[in-house]
Image 1 (cartoon, one colour):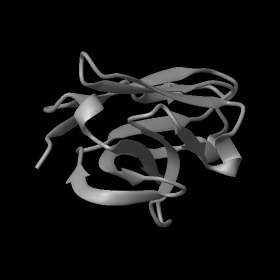
Image 2: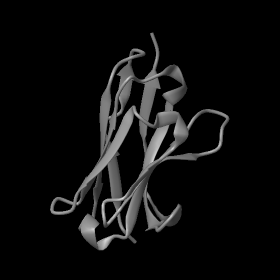
Image 3: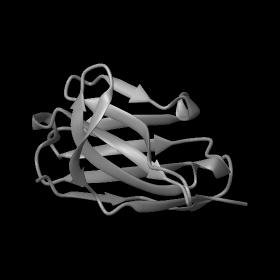
Image 4: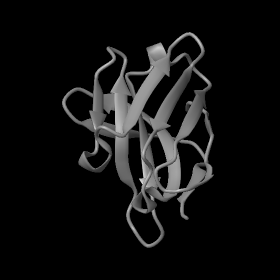
Length: 120
C-alpha cells in the first residue's frame, strides 16, 4: 500500500487560507488518482477534491471556486489550496489514493489526517 502523510492544517479565521500537502511514498504520476476528504465531528467523511494522472479535477459543490487541488508527480506530493475558508470547512482532512474516470472511487490507502479549524 501507498503510505500517505498530510500536513498544513491549523486554526484560521473565516475568510483565511490554508494550503494542505500530502506526500505519497510512490510517485503520484504512477497513481491513477488522489483525493482529499474531510470529516467534521458527527458527520460522514466526504470527498472535497480529487485529481487524476491526466490532471482532471473534481470538486464538491461546497468548495468550488474556493479550493484548488494540484499535484507534483516528480515530488510525489498533492496539494489542496483552500481560500475564503468558512466555519463549515472545519474537519479532519485526509488524502487517499483511488481511481477517477468520471467520479472518484476511493482506494484503501489513507493518511492520518490533518485538522483544519475555521473559527473567529
